[in-house]
Image (cartoon, rainbow, N blue to C red; front, side, top):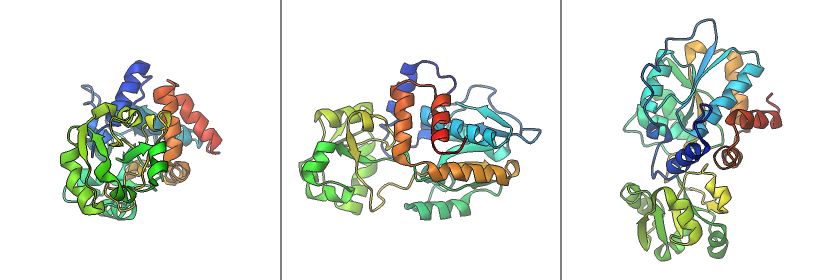
Length: 306
C-alpha cells in the first residue's frame, strides 16, 4: 500500500509482502513515520485533500478515491505516502487531510483501546459512537485487508476446508506459520473461538505464503489482499465466527471538508470494491509492477465510475 511514483518495484513488492505477514497486525500502524514537514494546514478553495499511508494498497485506494472524485468535478489534492496512523489520524482530525482510506477494525482499536466488537456491523456501530465529532466513516466496502488462516487450494479440497471452523477436525495434524508474535497473540483466541489446537507453531514471518505453498506449514497467517494468495494458488478460509475483527475498507473523512457529492461518489466506490477484486488489483501493482494510477483508472472504468 504505497504509491508516490513508487521508488522501485522491488521496494513496492517488498513492502507489500512484508506487511502481508503481520499477525494480528495493522497496516497503517506498520507504516513508516512521515517525513519532517509533511503536515499541512486545512485545504483552501473547497478542494479535498486525500492522504494515504506509505504502502502500495493504501496508495492504490487513495488513487481510486482521487480519480473518482475528480471525474465528478471535485478539486482534489493528493498527499500520499504520509506515514503511519499516528500521523495520519492527527492530520485528518485537524483538517490537514480530508479523506483517508481506512480499515474499520484497526481504526476502532486505535480510537478505543477497550473495544471488543468483531463483526462488521458491530465495529461500524462502535466507530460511529467513538469517533470525534470532526470525523466520520462513510459506507464500508465488502473488501477487507484482514488477517486470515490460509491454506493451499489442494489442502482445502483434500480436507474439505472452507471456513476456519473446518480446521478443528484437522488442526492437530497441521503446522501453522506466521510472524513471531502470531502465536502469543492468537493461540488462545483460536482455542476460545474455534477450539483449534495445532501440531506446531512456526515463525515464518514474511515468507508465510511461500511456506504454505512449499509445505513447510499447512496453514498460515496471510493478509487477505496479499497478491501471493493469487500467485501461489492459496485459499483464505472464511472467518465465520469472527476470530479476527472485521477490517472492511472505508473512507474516513473530515466532515467539514466534504459535501454530498464527495459522500455519494465514495460510497459508490465502496459498493463496487470487494476483496477478490482488490487482490487482483494488488497483483498488478505489487507483482506485475504496474503504475497504481493506471490500475486505479482501469478499475474505475470497468466499474462505470469514470
